[in-house]
Amino acid sequence: MRVTEGLITTKYLNVHEKLSERKIKIQTQLASNSKIETLSDDIAGSLEAIRLDAQINRTKTYTKNAQSAQDFIDQSLKSLDQVTTELQNIMVAVTNSGNVINKDSFPSIVQSIKNSLSSIIQNVNSKHNDRYLFGGTNYSADPVTVDVNGKAVVSALDHSAEIKIQVTANVREAMNIPGNQVLNSGMFEAVNNVIDALASGNVPSEAQKLSLTNAYQKILDVQSLAGEKLNRLENIKNVLEGQTYNYTEMLARVQEIDPAELVMELQQQDYLLQVSSKLLANSFTRSVFDFI
Picture 1 (cartoon, helix red, strand yellow):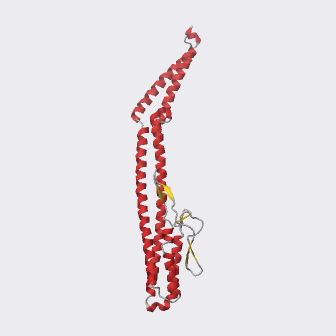
Picture 2 (spheres, helix red, strand yellow):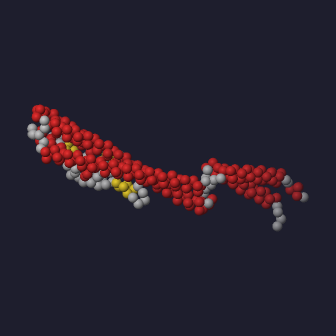
Picture 3 (cartoon, helix red, strand yellow):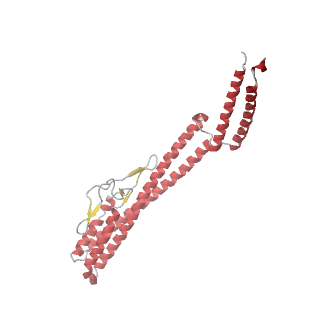
């Protein structure tokens, strides 16, 4: 077969193009600090990188879910803190009502208790991200309202449901305190009974005081359980953040380059391109008369 000038030129062009492509690839790897750009670069490494990247994204989603649950529980605890503070105020007011010198102060004591009850109701009806803290999965109405006499009316709707969220591949964690734990604590009934007694000019009975104390203790128990849930979510989040770090390190090792080796190869490609360019220049300057 006769080797023509056109064949020689085409060969040079193909070699020059491949050298240029390799140089660009090396430059891209150095810039991105990753040796994998396409699946064909390293099939096994690429598949491992895809798996690790997917795992990182899943773990980040679980971490975000755990943080959202933490925020919800944290807001619930803040509301319960206010509830217990107001209950303490009510208990002090009830105790003071037993002092004979306060007999004429019952109307002001009743108003003080109603004010504390109003604050309790406001906190129990609090929302976070448009969800009632103690409403379960019911978002249509306040869990508690106030009647014309300033007393609490607990909604007849079911507020006991848990709102669960995925925090690991196999674990779903409740992000709320079921509303029935607060609404059915006997707190509102106890406060209402105290208001009725004082409004009638009577000192609350020992049974009524005991009901108030028991309700207060139940709210403290709810706080304690919520605190445990908050700590558990914090532990889960810490584990997930550790996993994300480990997966990221593993992904970096799969994709990592040897900069020194690539720089040397880049220099070699530059030299070969220079040689190729000279050969191409010589080829293009020659005419048919050079072959006669």
